[in-house]
Image (cartoon, rainbow over all chains, first blue to last red; front, top):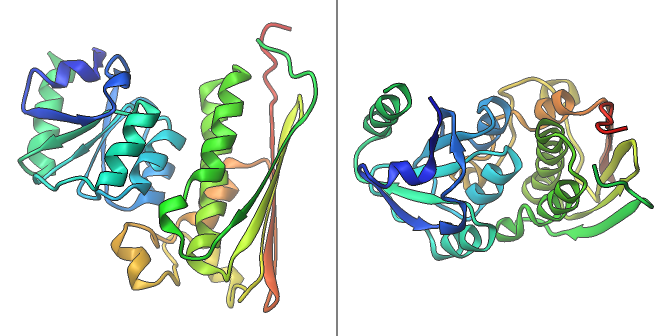
Length: 112
Length: 148
């Protein structure tokens, strides 16, 4: 089942930037902190879970056509990241728990 | 599909270690490709190859330049830097091999996937390297011409 990024906001994900992209579809999930690995392996329209928070993650998500970035472990995004994501309409969400816990929540959302 | 009346050309200087500007060239390319209504997977291939080439200049070189031309049927990109060159090209083409600095690795670069990613996403890829610099020549063909 396909969900929208906005559906994540009903759960433990908090939007911190990129409101303009809330209508993007989320079809899959990919977890990785190595940027080139993400561009090689993440499927298009994936929600990307990472603990990287610097501005380059926005470009990586855009180039790989991902739906949103979820920064796990409560890591705070840098100001440049937030500004760039707002400009590009790419949703960035914060998640207090681990990448694994975020993935479990997404799994339930995508399969029920 | 919007027709491309003429070719587009992008020329950008890329500065060494300027991580904050990383993605500027590929974002400009993406904006044009999206206007052309190309299939999303094709846009992604072009953008990933461009981004990897751009970041390679930032991470590894003394600085360089990217020239991009978009024709109705293909994308051509040249990424050229002014050194120091790739010491072991054969290893650099292997997945997982990286010479990236600690600074770059902490940011999640240096996975050793840059050149393999470029090769995988392009239809033509050539690399020439020496102490005076490295030049990548890349082409992506727009094979599917929808709506024609």
